[in-house]
Length: 244
Image 1: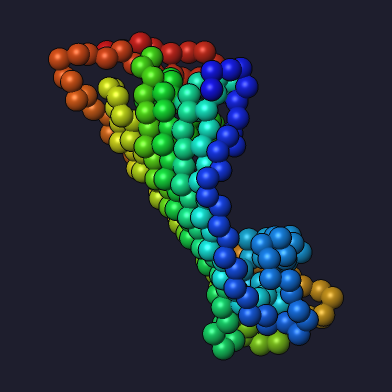
Image 2: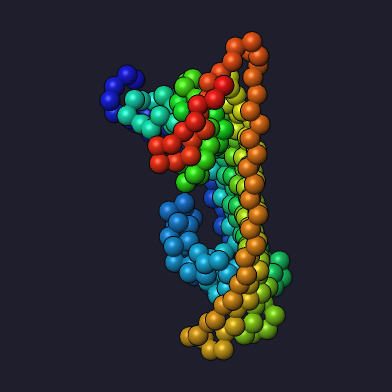
């Protein structure tokens, strides 16, 4: 599609959502993805960083599995996005009660292929505010894989005190396919232990801590070692140094 409009949703070839529910509440709940989206917006503690309070939302036992395919193509875009591309996405989510313990978890996998991306030779996401990375003038494909895992667990210690743990683990592997090519590995882990006090039915107090560790490693290389490539070290604010 060689035009001046950029369509992010040109083809949606496959979209499947399977929902199963076993309610912990007395009332009935509509068994549909839209109903679960509404449930998430109304569960205030589920949206917070303190997993100790998710029992106050009267959570459900349920499971969701989703598969989707997405492709794009066009010229009206940022240069690092690529001329075209596609991705295949799988995700699973669910919550279960094991006696007094309630556990919620989510896992997602995405395989992304980007064609003819420009001005990036070292970083997976050049738009995340990174002040320094390298770029080159060769349009190249990128093959990326994303793994996202998250869990929340809550356990009541008494009628007025409950504890919880929120954990997020992300792993990304990305590879530029043309010299100067690079293999990128990214991971981050985020743990948030929390506690919630309920001195009265209308008053809740929560406290949580957070630990985060993040690292991205880029390994540049040349396959055709006889053909030297020019690259640019970007320092922000229009400043760059040219190297070979």
